[in-house]
Amino acid sequence: MTVIRAMDKTMTCSEFQDALPELFETQADLSGQEHLKSCENCAALVRDLQYIASQARLLLPIHDPSPEVWDHIQQAIRQEKPEPPAAARK
Amino acid sequence: MSLTAQKTTNSRATGASSHATIARERFVLMAGPTQPRPANQHLRRNPPIAGEQEAIDRAREGDGRAFETLYAMHKRRVYSLCLRMLGNVAEAEDLTQEAFLQLYRKIGTFRGDSAFSTWLHRLAVNVVLMHLRRKGLPQVSLEETLEPSQDDGPRKDIGARDLTLSGSIDRVTLERAIENLPPGYRLVFVLHDVEGYEHNEIAEMLDCSIGNSKSQLHKARMKLRDLLRTGQRKEQIA
Figure (cartoon, each protein chain N blue to C red):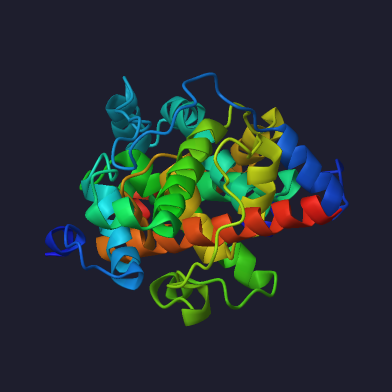
């Protein structure tokens, strides 16, 4: 339904932007959208949102927590050891 | 045992700005293509991990080495989520520790209905949200994710464009803008656009609908665009 409406040439900016979340998920290429051919504002919006998403994917972390974190986890686990295994308690 | 008693006493950076700087320094750009990809064609960043299921099975039986294996497999992802949400190394490490202790206590309840990483991230998300609430941010809640303020919704009238973002965002600028997102938006944005989780996985983590996850992501991107454009305008004026 949303996609069909998105192809409507008479779609307003408001209607197009309402449909955008679903369009981003269902269509690889939005450049064919009729509304974008005649609306520079929405075309710029789509470009910006796609650019933000693409840049965010480059922010994957490569750092680990410090070794002290595992040390503290081990200490905590040792103090819990007298109790039954986790599986038996939950 | 009290978790508080086991909290890491981190003597590293103590000022907010220092924390933020360190947080930024601990993230780097991954080498890779820079051209935008369609939003629905994510790199699959949460593939099954070799040996994970065996480690889960053994850890459920109380095998400490298996639990260590699970920690090694997932520590970076959990830590990165905490760091993104807190922007503070010391707090992020404390919450990473707490998330894995929760895992230790609850791994027996994992039934395999979802991917283990999704299940573990849900634990971590809850730990982060509880922490933020304790810090006096009552607006940080799953309810915020489910019922965002109307003010934060996408604007219908964009107005004349005086600026385009494409090709002008560097990593530090984007990270600073992400830090300024409302926590609920930041969480969905980080999980989807940075961490690469799918909407069905995020919906499971946050106890919300898939549609809600999509909507929140869109609003987060819109908010980011506003933040980035505002920053660029200030730079131009300066």
